[in-house]
Amino acid sequence: MEFLRPVSWADALAAKAARPGAVPIQGGTDVMVEINFDAGRPEALLDLNPVRELAEWDVAEDGRLRVGAGVPYARLIGELGDRLPGLAQASRTVGSPQIRNRGTIGGNLGAASPAGDGHPPLLAGDAEIEVESAERGVRMIPAAEFFTGVKTNALRDDELIRAFWIAPASGPQYFSKIGTRNAMVIAVCSFAVALHPERRRVGTGVGSAAPTPRRATAAEEFASAELDWTGRRPLDPAVARRFGELAAGAASPIDDVRGTAGYRRHALAVLARRTLTWAWNDYVAGRRVS
Ligand SMILES: Cc1cc2nc3c(=O)[nH]c(=O)nc-3n(C[C@H](O)[C@H](O)[C@H](O)COP(=O)(O)OP(=O)(O)OC[C@H]3O[C@@H](n4cnc5c(N)ncnc54)[C@H](O)[C@@H]3O)c2cc1C
Image (cartoon, rainbow, N blue to C red; front, side, top):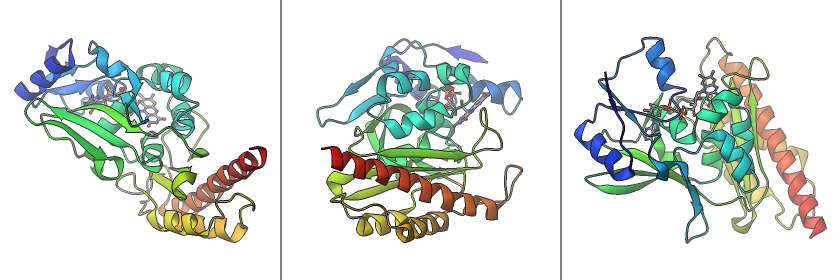
């Protein structure tokens, strides 16, 4: 197996164009597991670690954060936790400290597992994924269009993920995950909610309960219309309950070793109801203070 080691983004794109079969490796926390378990032997590995641009984040002209695909979870939590609380909360549930030091959202997106914990907050926060090829340049893909099937994504053979773009939180955000134990666990199901008060919109993301991570659009539309955005009233329990039911309705789960489809639907309804309640309580408290 060949090991390609470009030192700049331009070189990385050129290497991917020349060797579309080369498998990118960032933290390696998915790639190395696959290789160690003999799940496939790539013709070449394309090591992106020396590409410094991927390990940086900045604030773009439109105010959104542009976070390099190679920024590990530990830095997301430490450096961006205040601006991206939902994503930071999800990042804290990923693996162990070792995995969070190596693993990245870029790798999570590359693996495109339905259970990837980074995905629901990206969906709830209306993120876009910046991908690039040497031949065609940059493409911006909304997170909701990025996942195309079980462990497949919209990347073409000659493309690499450069960054994800997401607005800093304008309202409360929460992520919640059910696992068979507290840490080092693949989600049985997960749910993210983000309030966008300036647009009077509720964003959602459902994880591990369908072939791909997805938004719960009916739940979003329902809550966006029902909530009293002046923030004067607590959340009506009937609204929270209905939001949960609609979120569960967005799932198309399967029975597997981690849980049954029926349990996943039930758990999602509970997660959605709880996360919306936490977010709304924060929102109302914030309006009272300001
Ligand atoms: C013990 C353990 C526990 C884990 N726990 C969790 C967990 O709780 N939640 C969770 O979501 N995941 C978990 N994972 C999976 C893994 O850590 C995450 O998916 C992580 O985000 C992968 O990031 P990485 O940088 O290590 O990716 P890598 O392994 O380097 O790459 C993953 C995939 O993305 C592709 N890729 C990487 N960078 C790019 C790029 N810039 N452009 C195009 N493609 C790219 C690779 O080719 C590969 O297909 C766990 C893994 C282990 C080993």
